Length: 125
Length: 488
Image (cartoon, rainbow over all chains, first blue to last red; front, side, top):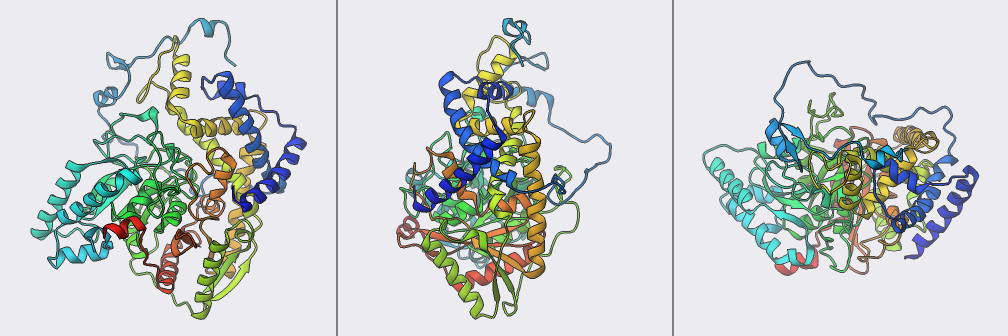
């Protein structure tokens, strides 16, 4: 790693970590992975959990700015809703769309059952 | 000199004066690709048949008297996160491997109308997430100036192909610097226009409030030609700008009295000495020609990168929810729908994409949404206001494009934060939505290119191009990468 990077990183990590402690952030990585619908094993959870701790500690720098009177940005150019006329226009052909699916039947996407043993055990949160 | 080394304007003029055909141009690009792809890996796919047919059609049309303008018959490369009807769009991800796009992206329609020859799809960091093109699940792209180094990213395949001459110009997408930073590292011009001015219909979404398509080219005029061809309102993209667009047909500026603001926060120890020296040299040149160069402090830039790495992953986590093994792409087995989705997603996404989905999901989760995503979006408002105030005193703002020249493959892959710092000078313009361009201005002691960034206010493209062209003229950068020079 070049010198500047070491300097910059050390600096932001110091600031970030202290802010992070002030906010008492604890990342429940297994919970986050469940929310994101990602099937990660214990090693992966530990790996990404440690990286997220460092990145979030850095990102917590944003707390340093007083934004109490500042609105959130949604569209950078301030554009509001964009409407079109309520008329039917050509769209992709249904068969062509279904052709792209991993599994299809009778004009519909085919998926495994929604309810299984896992769901019945109430594992979802 | 090979035809592959001509500029777009030279190639277009040569065809009309009978020096060569459009098929000759395509052949030259293909020959260059054949000589360099094994080393560089710019392309994920070259559309040999389609591109040759397009070149033949272009020749036929022009001979019959139909002239579609400056891009007619010009070979252009497309980053593989934009749809070309009938070709695979992979986003360099296993989750989309084998998926064939059923329609053209708006920019592709526009390029086809302009008569361009679409050479193929270029490599990228998976889903455009990265700054080195090492996050491609199909293998990294290498820098034509030094093949032990990265081309930058995420539009690294596009930038490297333009630099080496396996395309005349290319399209990239820029969410935090993904056009400008690889442009800088590969010694070509790269620009991000004002947010909303180029339709994103048919671009696979990464971060919807930041993503913008733009050109990579070997000079400022070529990049202007390409932008003029692709921008404009498109009802097919709800974020597409539906107001007035600036006239960029003939940008010009008088350097005498031009007010140039050097961004204080983008200098100092964090920037390599050669990069700072090259920047200083450009500023001296501008001063000599009568520009008023001053320093401007923008404290918002100190937290911009942190805000960027909250906003972009948050929006990515939402956008990438659509890859669930149901409607397209990879599907792994699972006893229930949800298990199928969880296994498919964990298998199909690579490490950087998983990391950003986790980060984004966390920063949007209950209890943290306002402190992280909300705060980052407020910082964008704050930063944009700060930049707009600076534009009351300055016509353009400037900085180096990248803190460093091209780094070695593997140098930053183990430490995500060190990779993220590659975007420190470029991400602020995505947060504000303002246009910015990177122009090559020199080489470091190792012979690696250095980029100079010019930022302009919203819809300030005319001024941005005019100043960029002046910088290009002052610097006279016309060095080609070693690989291209050997083959010329």
